[in-house]
Every structure is written in structure tokens, then in C-alpha cells.
Length: 146
Ligand code: DQA
Image 1: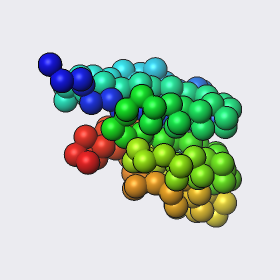
Image 2 (image 1 turned 90 degrees about the vertical axis):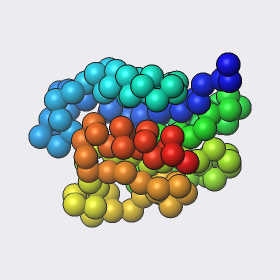
Image 3 (image 1 turned 135 degrees about the vertical axis):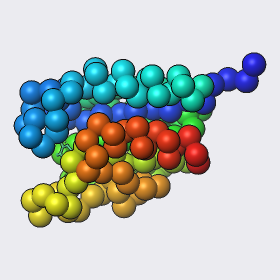
């Protein structure tokens, strides 16, 4: 049997606190619960996901490189606060040939002005934001359809 399609799902700073972090904005599900939903959806599509979270920019960069080395078909990336500041993440996305889909729970364009610029989005294949945890599932569908 052919190898399963592999999708990396990378999550940046403060997303480990989902469930209790500003639930009016980010919802009440924990990252583990969201990861479970992504895994279930992946299994139903005969795909495999690798879901990770780090509060450290360098980890996210290393994992983008690893996604390519591992033969991932796509990366779903919620870079959280680094979205708006990280030239290094922008460069890492450009440095790999694996398509990266930017994901956000909230809609940054409907929030403070400092969230309107996305260095991640400028390098990504596309962006899905504003649908809560469903953003990840929509992004997974988009990744599988690539
Ligand atoms: C976020 C949006 C970012 O602006 C913010 O810094 C986050 C979460 C989201 O998923 O809505 O940490 O990426």
C-alpha cells in the first residue's frame, strides 16, 4: 500500500493555553481537543497528521524544515503572534517547497491594526481564518485537495 499523505500542523506561542486563553476570542476547546478533531478528520481522509505546538520561534522554523525532509504534502501553520513579526518564519516558508497554509482561529483583519500585517501570509499558499477550530479542518481539506 502507498504511504499515507502526511500533513504537519504547527502551532505557535500561547496556543498551548487554548481553552482558558481569551475564550470569547479563541473558543473554549483546548489544543488537544482541536488536535483530536484534526486527527479524526485526517483518518477519515486516509491521511496522517503531525500536530505540534511551541512557544519558541526556532522550533517552528526547525519543524518547517523537518516537514520538507519528512515528505509532508502540506503544512498548516498557526504562527499565532509570530505571524505579525517574524521575518525568519517568512523566510523559512519560502525556503521550503512544501505548501504552507496559514491558519487562524480568529480573523486578525477584524482585530487590532497590528494584526493586519501577516509576514506568514505573505509567504503562504493561502490563509484560512475566522472560523474558530473549524479553520484547521477547512485548511486540512484545502491541503488534501492540493
Ligand atoms: C491567532 C491570531 C493572532 O493574531 C494571535 O496573536 C494569536 C492567535 C489566531 O489563531 O486567531 O495568538 O493566530
